[in-house]
Image (cartoon, rainbow, N blue to C red; front, side, top):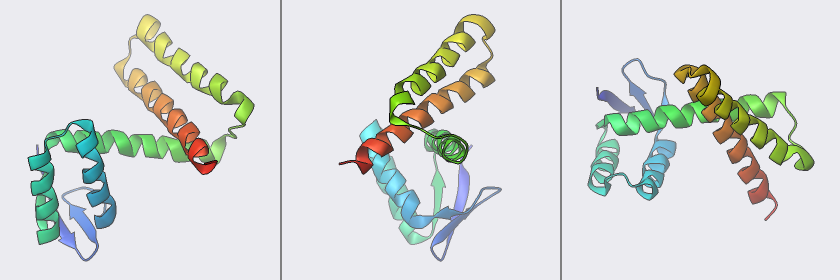
Length: 134
């Protein structure tokens, strides 16, 4: 299922989708090149965005959905939890432990996905702290 998007000024409106910032989407597409996505497809989408109308292929829609969930979790963690340096490894390990528990005991794919998103958000949070200290 490809979602159709329409460029409106500097935002993109999709059918039943949230508003997307054009610059952020173009940056996201540029980053996808590093993850093995087809360069021709990404170039075509980029050109379509710049022209006004475009479709996003399913594989990129899925990746965007995952990144959006991680970003949401990252914001939630920032609002709700401190992240002191001496506890960062413990927090990450605890989240990985919850992934293992879901795999070994529960087997619930929805819960597993949630736990994996939390692991990714914690890892990103740690990376952001490292980048801030450069």
